[in-house]
Image 1 (cartoon, rainbow, N blue to C red):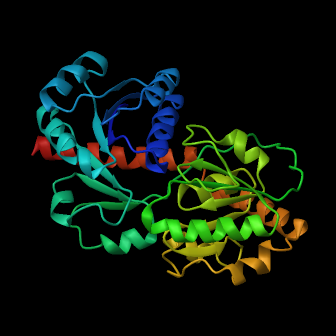
Image 2 (cartoon, one colour):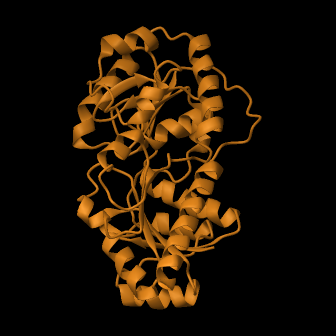
Image 3 (cartoon, rainbow, N blue to C red):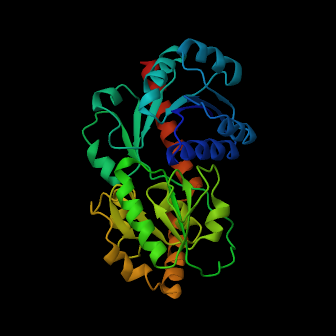
Length: 328
């Protein structure tokens, strides 16, 4: 299958999701052209070229049509991932006469009337499924998947190493500062992969690949994709963003999964007293057990291969529906 993927460049997990989707589609034998608007980061552009994912950064639909004719002729479908590129996907769909679908990655995506012009919509959580249940077009729920590391990873040595795997925003800053200061007071070493900076922690900046860091950390702090990546690498995860849902456990994972590990399940702020119960005098045995649980759960539920298989099935349904409409 020949697939056009459209998105805007963001320094967050959404961009990582899109490039991982492209890579996995290509690994499974499909052809991909990534259209990424607002890509003004030379370092990321270099990394993207290294991945061998074909991409263009033009935004004008007619220019893009020529790019598609050159790089991915006779494309089958467009898969959009950003509200900022939805109009581009619509225009290309019309010009190329192929279906267009959109994955909604966040609740504030836009009005339902905008999405109604798509051939289908994918949502990534049960919370989002409820929010968009009134759409009249086909709507599917497919949770985000992540690449799983090799099966036989040696158990990492236990140390008080924590990693903020997140992009900080003004809404998150109070929680991030409070947790950072608490962990430092309890003797933890803290690093950050993202834009979070604080005295006493090591900041790596935004990273395209975080496996090396995840091998070395014993607690990941973040939301959404960061939680899934932590679990895939056998690392306990603490849900912290604008809100705080705390440590992922076998008892709460189904509930916290409902809101895509955003913190919106409880909508509480970070509490040092509650965190102290788990992190002030941490039990290496308990936290390693949570890491083992998380890895097994991720293998069963968050495989990117499984996610792509579900998405390909949706592509097939859209193509079949559009083919039937053309014949009538």
